[in-house]
Length: 141
Image (tube, rainbow, N blue to C red; front, side, top):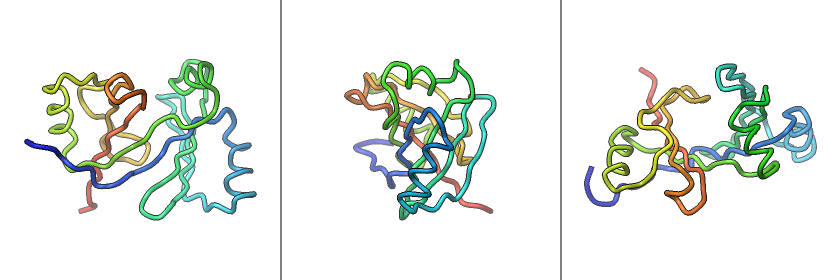
């Protein structure tokens, strides 16, 4: 990958919340948003609700335990935007490119995220203070 790669879309915006049920009362019940899925990622200590917005999602993220990365975020900053996720064609090539450019990564290799696709994070120091998640959507079949 050379030159300036482009991003395909904003895949989702992650919003950290203390209590997923309370957040759903706002987003679903008061704002009228459709919730497409709620999933639990026990290994990461998270419960997540997905709200479709066009081609993108709002991802409401609540901690299941005190040592999850979202717990630490909520403790330091309170509820609000946790990260922005951008879709890319080849996540490993993108990580390799960014590493070669001296950008700080949280993950050297992608792992499977809540949506079932490979994901990796870039450190906020590399992106001007924004936790950036990269996601490689793969077609079924």
